Image 1 (spheres, rainbow over the protein chains, first blue to last red):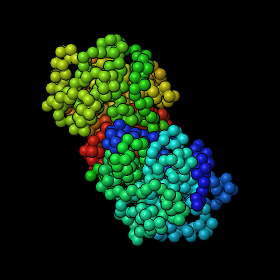
Image 2: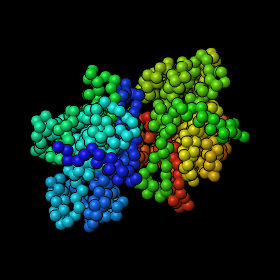
Image 3: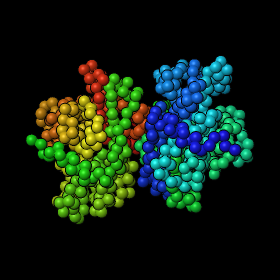
Image 4: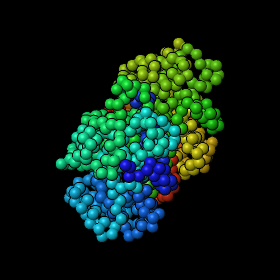
Length: 319
Length: 319
């Protein structure tokens, strides 16, 4: 059973398209040679606030608005790009946002969220941020969760929808898995426009909860926040909602920290963009797929989730 | 006296447009706030071979071809992006290329030039590369010089032409000066489509030969290769040809090495692209212009020349 129909992606796109950037699809001769495949990259770093997260946040808020249920204020918790997205969408729509962020997060992203006009409350841990978020919801705030929400998932699917709508016909589509919103939306968009295409998830081996869940058939939860440079993939587990879609993927490929850094460097050098390491987990997984002899010369679409890199992460990548 | 008419830019664009990428114009709310201006960036890092240089090289070769004068082989000397551009254009047109490159150059760029099928000859110095190039020309090869050529200049102007043609109406346009081909073409395109606009050159203070030439009215030659992270601006002096246009600029602004690095970081973080430090000389100059109270709220177009950064340069920028 699917929670939402693939056609929800089209509705989401109609709802948000005037407010977002239609992000470009990029490619490089060098990368095609290196992969022995035709590889296209959809880059959400060029999205407003620098990541795909705005798509979901906007779709959720505008859906609530359409239903006449957007009043008071919205609330969210996030360790990264979702915070900026919620702040931006709330400002655009003209509603207050209260966002809980663990204080070990990039000052860069925290400042950017405040600058967009949101009230930011720092917490000691991720668990505490989530707990305070729940209390805020119990007081009547409208929750805009990072992934466990149908309208968030539908919004995230609009990036892949744009690429497929533009006529790309890949053999396989790759996206990194965190909480599963991005890959679930991507899966739904593919079902809608190009169902013959494989949809393959990508995860750091150090944070392989979705991969274990996929293989065992039940949601696996990591005990502690995993250590990976791909900060968007640090989520402890999928939700029941996202697992429904993730179960149906063609595969989930795990990649090492070394591979994540190498592919971040490769894409930066050859596409002339700044993909986050989290994005490049999907590129590294695509490479593993592409070098399998049965996939030689095939066409792939790699969904690059965002481009928000602070200077410290830049140093870490290029050391 | 101008050597070529501004209308040559239009002809160049018609000649090369089917073979090149029409590069995008990018912007960022953060940068607009920071500059107190509306700033647009034309990014040639998305050009084939990663820099504007392909525009000039292709225009020169295709002009020779139209005139029935393209036979035998072409030759060039370069310490960087021009080499790859000549190699690419020669391969596209189907003519052999012999390119002289000083051996202290980035292995990255040398390898890329060879990979495009050009014969690469390494020399000990820049002077030796230029000398061998002249000998090759005396033996009948067709010269494709880096900047001292009308058709090269006309080709380089097509990037600014694209932006102005798309409807941008800046108050000032900024471009970094090396040998002067890029700024000369930019000046001509502006004369053609938006002559009321100021055209302002930018140079590292450590390599300020054009700035001195502009102020004194005669070409100043640096004694030694200057020390600057902006490797495209290391040229020792302008040519008579490029100085004719550079004399007519509204200003040339010098920037420090620290400013070049800071603006390279700023543009990378907020535009999500990888501009070369040479490109960002123009961004740093634009900032100096924008913070002058009389320019507050004005609109600027910054021409970003390319995006070819090797890993060592990346480390240097982010250290």
